[in-house]
Length: 416
Image (cartoon, rainbow, N blue to C red):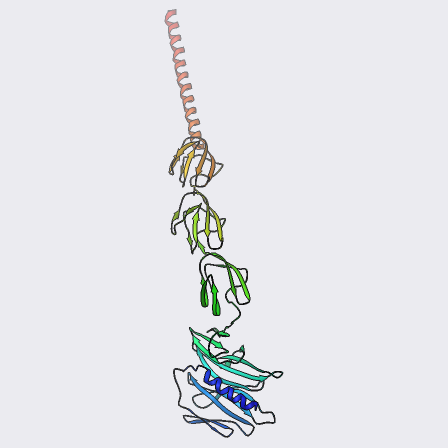
């Protein structure tokens, strides 16, 4: 009686599943005669079955010149049970892969699906467990001549739908799904939210995936929600509660950064302020100063970054001594020894200098430097003094000599 009941359930199961048609079909004939199954192709026959094993094919599919035949095997032993089978046959009739699913009683391969070019086989397991019937399902992906590890889905399956590149699996003819499989062969169950963890922190945007529907802020979402605005979020799904924070992506500055040149900030989303003034996307920040970038989001979200833009001073360094004129280039408002100057100002006089550059938000940059007389100038001055001294002495000697000569002549004349 259990076998008859299983057959009836199996017939209903196959009728309820969605079949996915392949792009190319091969003309083969599958014949059942007694216990024997014969697969007849162009120029070949493949036979399975004997007096103890009755093969029954459910369907076949052809993918890239390979023929996949699947179904169940009825064992004619004292304990009658079913086992699923999968045969992969080449176009020349060679069996290149064969799998028998015999993990338990009453196993079958009722259907296949094409998911993003990948061949998926459904293996069902119908068994009794302490006076109750239990159904377990396994989904295998066939690739490169092997079956993958299976994805397990509990409960009898009545509906499988292929939607947006995913297989949605249901234990009911109508209504919610209990599981789903994506093209990367990941499984999703109906009691979990995917893409976030409780107290998680994320950046820019995050897509939350779930099965069926979810109510958030009075809006009903189906299968997924995209969060792309900064904030603190609270999400409840069935028996699970998730709290998480979403930060914007910020390009152009980093917290604690120091920059010498102008900056342009790109914030992915949120209400953006710079030093408490609204900041327009793409606005150039070029003056020296201390800056606070603040982003407001939902549910009290407030994120801040602090950074500095310097004057990008060139021409002098702090506490340095120079022996030549210096040209000062900078951004901001400059004061040299208390006198306002503009960028490009040249300092050429010997002396001690204090340069102050002011910027936004009480920014102050102070540089002390000195200009001394150059060694070459000092040497030239000393040589000039020596020349003057030598010339003066020579003149004085010459004049003195003439004086004495003149005096001598006078004395001689007077003596005469």
